[in-house]
Amino acid sequence: MVETIRMQLPDGLRNRPTEGLKATWVILLLIPALCAGSFLRYRVLRDHGPREYEQLGFDARYYYVSTGIALTEGRGFDAAYNQRDPKPPLFIPPPLQAIFVALVFKITGAQSISALLMAQLLLNIGSGFLLFLLLFRWKGKVAGLIGFWLWMIYPEFSYWVASPITENNHLVLLITSLWLLMEWERRGGVAWMFAAAVLIGIMNLQKPIGLLLGIWIAIFCLFRLKGGEKWLSFLLFLTVPFLVLMPWMIRNHIVTGDMVWVSSNGGVLFHKVNRIDYDPMVYPDYGVNWSAGEGQVKSIEDRFWSDEFRHHRTYSRQGKLYAWHALQYVSRHPFHFMRNNLVKLGQRYIRMPYTLERVLQTPRLDHRTVKLFVFILFYGLLAAGLAGLVYVCRHRQEPGNMLVTWCFIYLTGVCTLMHHLSSGRLALGLRLFLIIYATVALLALWRKIGDPLRVSRNIMTGKQPVSQDR
Figure 1 (cartoon, rainbow, N blue to C red):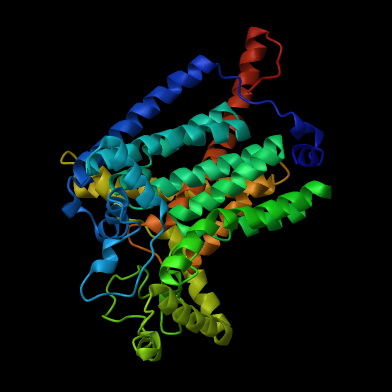
Figure 2: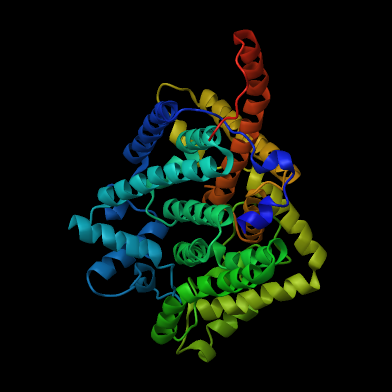
């Protein structure tokens, strides 16, 4: 795949010189970012991290940590959500976060929430280095440094370290998946291709937002590759992610009778924000100021709670009824559906999450100063990210540009179709891509400013311009 794409490049782009930073300078510039990011994450854990099980939020307590405890006690995937009174429809949460919780508890020998959050902190920092490596391989050392700094100091990525739900570890897996995909495009070979496809499947066990990402990349392969490699990559990305999910799906079918690939609430959530009586301008954030029973359909509820489902009342079956109702809405009211989702698309990028203020709020800063700083930070990243997106699209012939943008388009579509939370947690992946695109924009600005200065310096000192390595 590498040679296929490189041969399509203009001569000036095949061996483009990059920044000649020495390794010593790279390390020296990484250290302050690491210190600043580690301190920021430590403050978040100190100020917002729960200390005991009873202090956890609903999702963490009822979906993930309780299931992790059940695993350590040999009770299987027994989520506390299903033990509530009155008994709700049987719900299946994604399994990987619960497995992570169980592993941490087993290793530490105690059900320590602090140890669990510390493990997430270490993964979060480690993924920053992986992002550095991704950008370094793609655009050079300066790009890696810029991306690492942005990852470390942008507050939203620090906040979710303090919550043992899916978001933090999903970001880690998303960065790792992108790195493997970029290495596959750069190096070629079945091994990298297979590893990327496997990790996409594993990532979905953490959070099913990428359930169709393998299919999406398989389509990319059909358009970008040629010969036998095209069909091999198409088949691998089409099948391997689902093969990874197969054991979990088989387990769900045996235990519950439902063929659930990851989790069982997708149909209900999809319907909540895709229906004729929903207006995202009035209710942009899921659940905020909603009336009791908002989004419920009486005919579906009457049927689901009737004797028809008496022996098999699961969230999956309820979700299928609501998903079918939502698809009927899409077919009957396509313009309303498109209008709503255009509004939702804009909201995913312009609605500022409250988590930014929570991270930066300190006794030394008044509320207005914090709000101003958060405003500049959030919309500054948005502006730089969009500028980088435009740059990448204009230089789409460069290796990696189209693959990153292809993944970005997929994630944007899924986040738009689904619901939005005021915390911004469901749009975190989009913010990661904005970091990547902002890095490209800042790198282009660096080159525009730095190249004339370098030429002037060489002229003044009488040095001959030399080709710079990575």
